[in-house]
Length: 220
Image (cartoon, rainbow, N blue to C red; front, top):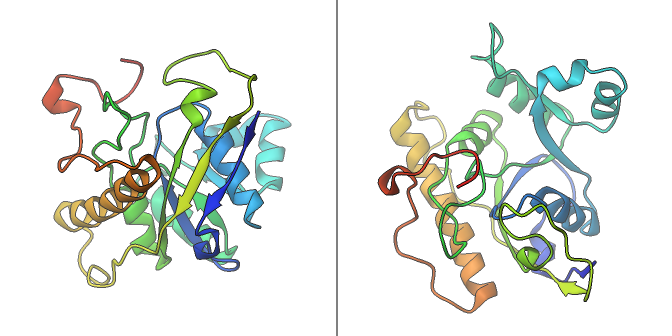
């Protein structure tokens, strides 16, 4: 369906654990970013609800492929991020986490306000968080669309950034202020990469769904 040129692909670590944090504006993004990571020589992993791992056959496939289970409810919910971080380190995985948490609400498809999960895991695990941006995916599958365009062949470009510097946050209590500070650095790095791909200047302030009376999940 597409060509997949990569800019600065050498910045993606060839070994060891890390978190890849890309922008998110199409429901097909995980397939696209998985394709880019595979092209760069790493096996893509994702976080998945722990309940899915208990589904016959599907659960076995998820475990075999190294996906990371996360409890989202019940007694295991509170320590789920720490367990996931430990698995990330122990197995030296490369994990894709979307810091926005859902498709951006920004009308121009710029990264919106991020959530703290990716930064929390990076600080807990002591692993780098690598920002990335891709552009062109919307021509295959527009935001919230269920239609996929196969022809003509598209071009989707990805740019990999330098690890976000969180060294001054390491060792600090993982309170909301610390996590917000780290998350804003990550989102600023992603927005800058996307600006380079688009040849435009990203907005100075990230889109905040709450300020615009929007829900943060589901379709607009």
